[in-house]
Each structure stands twice: as C-alpha cells, then as structure tokens.
Image 1 (cartoon, rainbow, N blue to C red):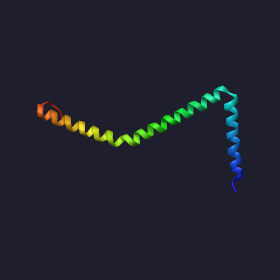
Image 2: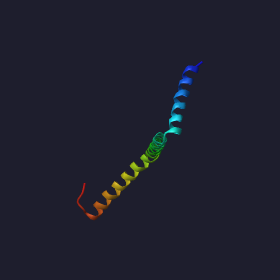
Image 3: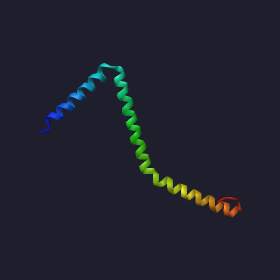
Image 4: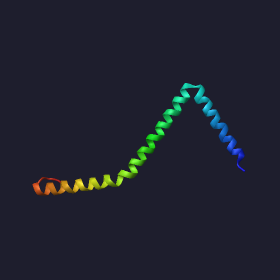
Length: 77
C-alpha cells in the first residue's frame, strides 16, 4: 500500500547509518543531536511538571514578605 514511502525512508535511513559507521564526525553529530534532543525533552518535562508549583511558591513568598514588612513597619509596596 505505502511501499514507495517505506522504501524511501529505508533508503534515507540506510544512507544515514552508512555515514555514521564510516565517518567519525557524522557519528559525533548524531550523538550531539540525540543528547540535545534528550535535554530538550527533560527541560520540557520539568517545565510542565514544576511550573504550577513554582508559581505557587512565588505567591507564598511574596505574601510572607508583605506580612513581614507590615509587622516590622518596613517601607515597601
């Protein structure tokens, strides 16, 4: 059904594997790109999972500072 596109992808993948095996710089490039991809995935995961907590903590700290300034009669907002 989709054999033409499968063969095209297989040929491109085979050429990439050939360059990786025969050329040291191509292997390093693929390794660096893979590590960059993994760092990006971890960064996105951390942002998605920690963002609400960071905002809550910032709000709580600002609230504490505001109360502390009010108790100590310090200038501020």
